[in-house]
Image (tube, rainbow, N blue to C red; front, side, top):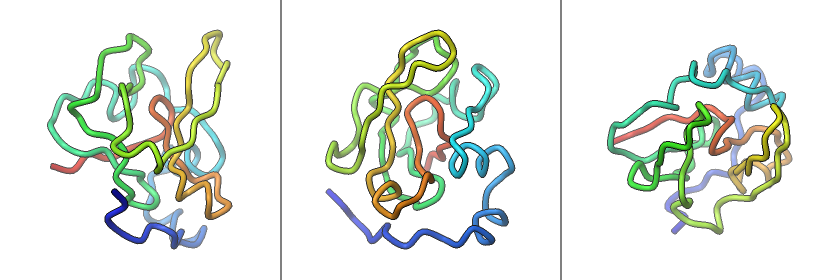
Amino acid sequence: MNHGNYDNKPSDAELKKKLTPIQYQVTQHEGTEPAFRNEYWDNHKAGIYVDVVSGEPLFSSLDKYESGTGWPSFTKPLDPANVVTRSDRQFFMERTEVRSKTATRTSATSSMTVRRRPISATA
């Protein structure tokens, strides 16, 4: 289901211009957005969620659910081959972090996660 070439990661200087400070911290330095105070935890608009760095489509709003965690949560990715998962035990809970496989493959910590990375929705 790969519909584009997402292998070209922008330079660090380009990312600093393109991303907000919190997006940069989260995607490039494994920071965490605040629960219940982030852009997409309570988003109910129809659309596709994409990696904010690469633009790779990762999730559908049809698969989003209310997890009660304060971060966006999904039942499945658009294409399982496009993501990698990792167990995350920060903040006194166990979560599954989901990252863009393409962003990970480009030797970047730039990635998105179901519950921790900034994402953008497009209709």
